[in-house]
Image (cartoon, rainbow, N blue to C red; front, side):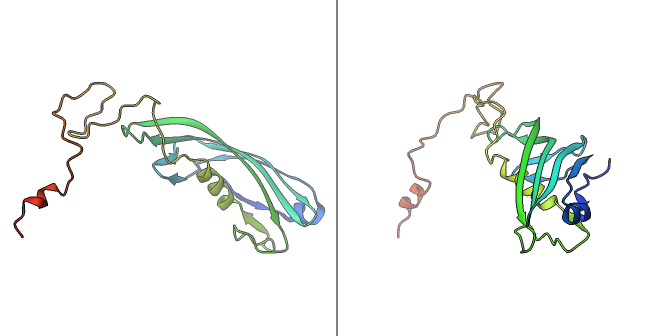
Length: 166
């Protein structure tokens, strides 16, 4: 499957103030904090790029499939995601995305990846009631509960140092 096309010619938009209709599909390769976009399913990019005076207005919707690991039990789950992009860039100055409007083509991938990463949660749970992994043996606690002897959690990990004769 081909990569998602994020390179567009802005000649008409910048010179004639006409809108650029964007409708693309392809593989979106973004990974962040245990979450990654699917390389088996196409992402869909739809929206408009328009000019408003000295500004370029980028209004896009990205639909994609992502998978992530549960922060408690490490089970992988897949889900559909939708990210809205509404970015206004000043044409005559430098911008945060290092897009040069003097070039014939621009690549909006930095904008897309930043907005998707902003929407990714650092803590992902497979279920709100996920019990996670056993702290002693590492077994998943959602399907069965381990019966290990509990340690005294109040005991300091440095308590054994008190036994040293200094």
